[in-house]
Image 1 (cartoon, rainbow, N blue to C red):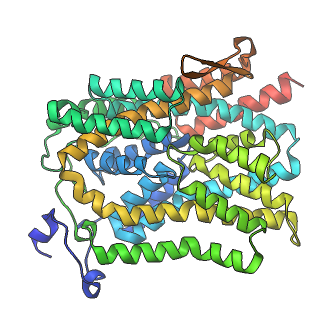
Image 2: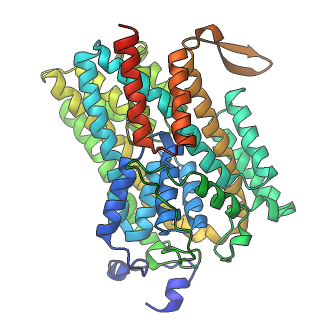
Image 3: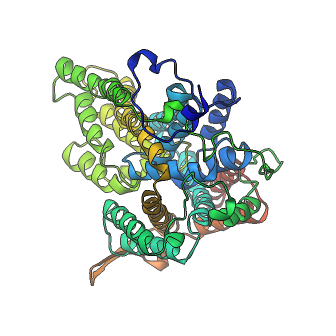
Length: 506
C-alpha cells in the first residue's frame, strides 16, 4: 500500500476482486486486545447513552489513545443522526475503524450482550416473582444512583461539545424546545444542523468546533482545554477496584489519527451494494420466514414487524418512542398491562447496555402472555430474541453502509460545522432525558402545564420521595467527592435500597 493510498481523501471504486485484500489501518492494536477492551466497555455501559459514550471516550480517547478526539466526535455525530441506540452504534463504528467489519461486529455485539442477558433474567423474575419485595428494593436503589451517574456523564459530554457561547446557546435552545415545548427530536436536530451550516458562513471560527483532519494542532480545537480539564476531574469514573484509572496525558500519537484514511474507510459503490444486500437479508429474511411459517397473526410475526418499524423511528433513543411503544403494546396489542412499561424502563436504566433494550422486555411479556402451543417462559425467551434481532441488525446496516461516506466527508468544513451544531443540540437533548428521569425518580406524581404552546411536566412537590433523594445525594457524593466508579456506586445504592425497604419500612 503506498502512502498516497493511505492518506488519500478521495473516494475510489474498489473492484470485488481486490476488496478483500485491502488492509485496514496500519497499527499494532491486536484484535485480541481490542476484544477485551470492548468487553470492558460493555461491562461499564450503565447510565444510558451519556454515560456509555463517556466511558468509551475515557477508555478509547484518553486512556488507550486509539482514536483522536476529533474522529471520536465525528463518529458520534453520525450515530446521533441515526435511528437506534447511538452508543452501541458508536462502538460499532470505532470497532470498524480499528479492525474493519469483524471489529464492528464484535464491538457492537458485545455492547448488547450484557444488557440482553440481564434484561432476560429480570424479565423472567418479573413475570414469575414480580411481587417480591427484594426485587422492588433493588430497583429503587439503582434507579436513584443512575440519576447521579447520568448527570456526571452529561458534564463530561457537555464540556467537550460546548466550547463557546454559540454552542451553549444551541444546547439551551434544544433543551427548552424539547422539555418545555415538546418539539420533535428530528426537528431540533435539523434546526441545529442548519444553524451550524449557515453560521459557518459568517463565523467559521465559532461554529466549527469539531475541526476536520486538515490540522493536528490542539489549539485549532476549541474544546481541547475543556476535555483535558474534565478528564482530570473525572479520571476515576471507571475505577471500581479502589485505584483511580488515570488518563494518558502523554503526547503519544493516536492509533486512528486525524490525518490517516485507510483503504477500508473509503467509499465504494460495489461495497455499499454488498453491505446493503447482506445486512438487509439478515434483517428481513427472518421476518419473511416468520410470516410464511407462522402467519401474520402470530405473536412472533407481530413483534418482528412492529419493532422493525420502531427500529427506523427511534431518533433520540428509547425515550423518544417510549410513549408510542407503550400505547401500541398496551392498547393495540395487549402485550403489557398499564404501568408495566415503566418497570421495563427501570430494568433498562439499571442494567448495562442501551436503553432501547427495554423493547426486549416488551417482546418477552407479549410472547409470555400469548404463548400459543409453547411454554410461556420458552415463548417469552423466543420473543426476546426476535425483538432484539430486528432492533439491532438495522444498527449494523446503518454503520457499515454509511461510515465510509461519513469518513470521506470529515474534511468538509460546512458539514463539520453542521455536525458541531448537532452535537451541541444533543447535549440539550441528553439534559432533557436526565431531567425527565430525575422527575420520575424523585417525585411520585406529576402534572402537565399546557398553555402558550408549552407542554411542561411539573412535579407535585409534596410527593417528593425523600428516601430516593437521599440515595441520589449519596450517589453524587460518592462520584464527585470520593471519586467512586459506577459499579461501586450502583452496588452501594442497591444496598441502601434494600436497607430502606427491608429494614426501615418493615
